[in-house]
Image (cartoon, rainbow, N blue to C red; front, side, top):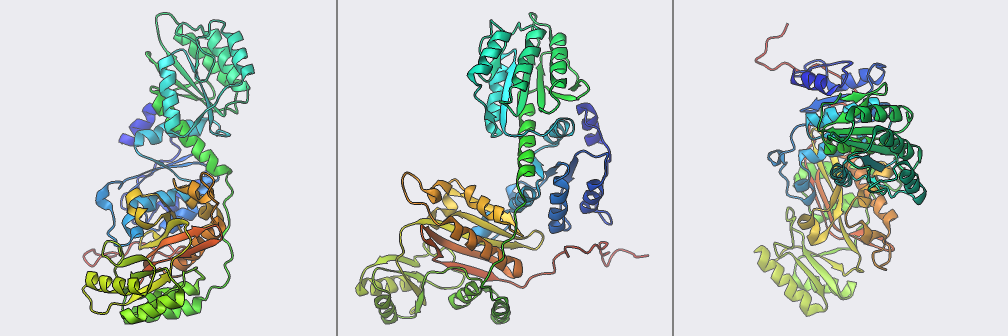
Length: 546
């Protein structure tokens, strides 16, 4: 009742309203299928607490989003819902992260509140989609214009710089114009005719993809006349989205035959416009494709996983881990094992100095903190001392260690997988090494991954400039990085038994990428929702059946 009351007050029309309750026989996915062809529905708004079949939701929502926008409020952002995990990937992949990844790939606009959802729905159901992220702001109150500009920056919208010709046209429209730059301040006493002409000049210029009009009622202006001028000017521009902010007087929530939305606060108007631009950008982007990967030995991988689960589920030894990675062509740095100091010295001599030594105990994820990593070992005596030091740190007489040659300096990344019985597997890419948990610079995607997903994942990182050549440094091999991401995603798709996987660090250099350290946790996969089949919820033993 509260949602319907808010929708009525905000001017949002309702084509269908469904309260599903416990969803015993009708699901959100059923409704998405229905609304896909429902001509009376221009946008879909959801309040979601759970997903019975999230992968089917992703497919249906992606298809529906290509026709009409989906807006959703999903509860459960609190840290109390964070999943437990020992790997870097699992620790970062809270359930809320999974929901964000699912929504992003399906084109669903996630809202923080029901009010934000209704504000955005008003815009998306009545106005055309923006052609880009450039906005212009015009009004009779400089303060409101500044607030709108600040909100636009927060919404990642571009406050376009007006051309000299357009600024001159605005100056001709309003000779006493306080400012012709964007935002355009027409002055508190601007008459309706000036407001209308300024709106037309901005809207017809082609220099902005959307327009925000701010109006404040004062004793020196004619607000009703200004609203009429705004309505008439907006009706002359049916292909440009326009939103209005009216302060200081009662105003209808929409204006004119085009139902131009009116907001009480500039932040609400601009935030809604930001969501519309984000959705329009998603609509413009190609869906991407799944590349065909060669040199994958799935039969061999099945044998390895089955044998490992039979022997001992959980964190796997180095031999199992490296054999499984090899089945998927995941590039690894050359590694040799040793179980005593003399073997370690011999291996180091074969590699050539300097070398790296790491403990291999299964389950030892954070090796540096446990004293299980030694870098830059330049001779046999350093290798011997490092082995004894690691043995002392782990309280083992003769621990197994892995030795590797020191690698070329590059960008350290982390690539990982975490599996959730409800959401399936998530793939993570982030800044790696010791920076993984400190900086939290990472990106997630759910399966399946497309070529656009893999490229977007590393480009979203704040550290992305380090990969493309920062301050004269050479660019790293991002094609090889994307191939690595694909192969990790393929492993996760084939084996839900991969409960947690960390490749950290993955070193990217101009000539390729290689994983220097790998940890994998294998666990029996529980039955997951079938992607296609539907079935009624099973009654519990305490419920009578008919």
